[in-house]
Image 1 (cartoon, helix red, strand yellow):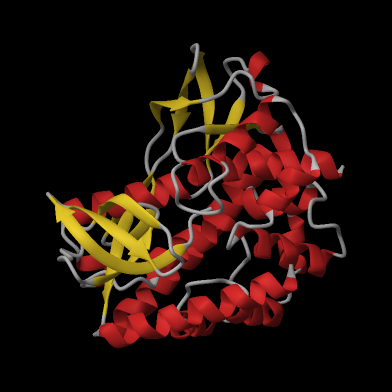
Image 2 (cartoon, chains in turn purple, green):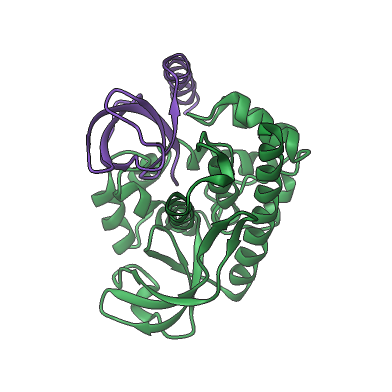
Length: 77
Length: 256
């Protein structure tokens, strides 16, 4: 299933972007046209579509939350 | 049977994993195991690394008193069955805060507040509610092109179904009802034929024939559904759409 992932736009080309996610992974073909995200923006991505632009503060909070939950999930496995 | 549950789960998780949207980078291994009809420990360990799907299975299994890979558990999650009704709203609420990566706790609270604890731990509901609570500019008032893209991603990401009309070498022509998005919210469109990929090496697709109903994820046929499953996926999807439209309407009125 798809999870909502937050990450940073590191490059864009004709409505498509490379996004580096807070979990360390990246996607090259994220459609950012719905939210019109530019290079450097933090975005919320679902599947291959960016559904929202996050403020830097919200992005920071998401990054921390992701790390904490990942640790908890790893511990419970 | 546990091995059937593992394979059923893997069939539905395979395509988003191979596209890089979730789970570890193991598409080759999952494909080999599906083609060999093998549900060994290595496949189970891979499936346990999916960030959202596996925690959902654990939640449903815990509430129903079943093993995580008991066939009925992934079936509840991907297709829908009565096990979903056994998950207490309070457990799903707590789970959504603590066991699912990436979701904004404020949005989780909104979902549960607006739906009075009726949110089901069903994959399609998760997909549609994620869109409904996302930071899409202007909510339902997004422009038509954005609506089309959003509907397409929701349709690809949910588990849909279709009746096989023609069997090709590695494609099926199936009659489906795709998700559409308009000012009234999400709905299913009129039946239309589309092509989806499938793997004839994966059981039971070697024997798939016109008239079968298949489950579909990211334009890929996952499994052939039984008549009971075909009925359930319609029923649970309709319920998910009703709930999500309610959620979107409350989101809209909150923004006004």
